[in-house]
Length: 168
View 1: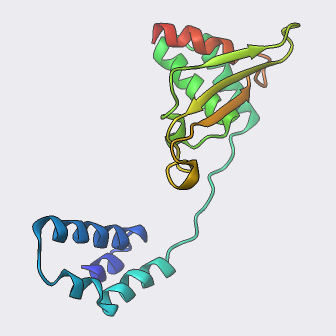
View 2 (view 1 turned 90 degrees about the vertical axis):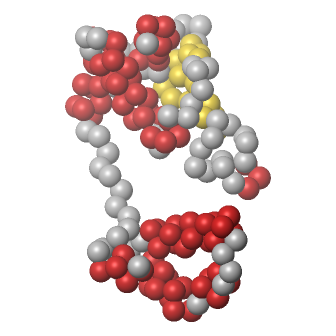
């Protein structure tokens, strides 16, 4: 099976997850002889070889300023609520610099802090379970999220969060 994965050009994490799944299945089904398979240097070598030949991770490009301005305009003037919510999600991802998976795990405790003269404003929230807080000593500690609530167009997109979520 591991040879087929290599020939098919599979993602490098596949063999490791397959071996983990097989180990769990062997434990649940109480299969005898699993230790022999698990200790096989041949299987371990194939899985390790696939990890060594993986392609380097490429970072996606940053959005252009014109694109961010279009997202901000969509938050305020985007037509239906679903379009405005989608634009809001894109703007929030740009300004908070979160991973998408972490953004989807944010709670419904959005807050906008504003200075007395209304010139400075921040959008605040917290992500409960994130990629970097699932393990180790930070496990269970929510990740604080903050971003400037005024965008590139001068639009106060943070104030729109509350309005959009009321109708969402």
